Amino acid sequence: MELRAHEEAETAGVGVSTGFLARKLGVSPTTLRSWDRRYGLGPAVRADGRHRRWAPDDVAMVQEMCRLTAAGLPPAEAARVAKEAARGSGAAAPLLVARAPAGVRIPERSSVTARRPDTPGARPGTPGSRSGTGLPLGDVRQECRGLARAAVRLDALAVQEQLTAAVRTHGLTRAWEEVMVPTLRAVGRKWESSGDRYVEVEHLLSWHVSATLRHVYVSAAGQGRDTVTPPVLLACLPGEMHTLPLEALNAALAERRVPVLTLGGAVPPEALMTAVQRVGPSSVVLWSQTRNTANLPLACHIAATRWGVRGARTRSQVLLSGPGWGRQSGPGLLRPRHLAEALRLIAAPESRDGAGRLARSGAAEA
Image (tube, rainbow, N blue to C red; front, side, top):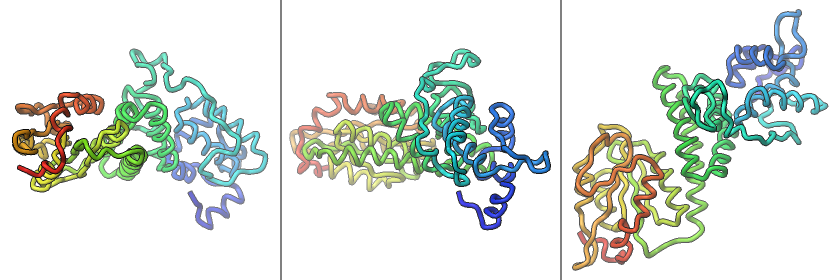
């Protein structure tokens, strides 16, 4: 975050105002005043004895506070660490630096699994109902709160660090279901209820979630290739552009060494049928986010399509995924409710016995 020339000149003199600092950090002025009152994270000097003017050292301390809370530390502990870092930094820190001073380490503690006594019935790792940013997160893991704070601040590096740490700590499936999805839903609800606000937050978070999922896929796919087993085909139905759930399934299957072919968003019916007949997938996962994109006749047609060599023709297992399907289903169609269940159904032996033994050369026969 860079200051314009006149702002830098102002900083060199008496510092920046609370309003300016709040805008740069993505927090409210009330939050900065609350941190000053509760934890002593305020400006060391006040112009005219009244107005707050934040010097570079003050700003670096508050920036560190933001980074630590985004990492999931409770505010009181984050404030203590930020003040200790400020006292031990010696020279003045650059204004609005993006990362912590060298040598500062986030204390390891069980904040992820802590339980707040003021939240009755909260499960481990789910303190409070809000992230401190106004996002209605509900009963979620502590990581969701830190991820939401980083996203609202538009701190791209912190968002990516949080996502990478979640996958490393919990594994892809749990990170998706317990960290990424709840935060994405909270941002989406805030976007829908506040007009055009938070659109940039939703776009930033979605982009980094997608980047994280694709990184997992690329890393796993580069460790070996199965050229015998037919792939699992993933596609969004015509008109459906919500691809993140399929990207999560794509990455999770790659981790399990299951061949996968992802066609992405809004796949036309003809293209989808052509792909089924060409590759002979063991399973086809059709994603629908909204009811107007759920196409049950198309799903039934895919499920009834037989392919393979004569005398040994088979058909693909079809999974209807996403909230758009509602209660819809049909003969032989499976309806997984979440990522872990989809993985279990795809990995079930009965789902792949017939398809896995067929040569690809016969898959093009309709």
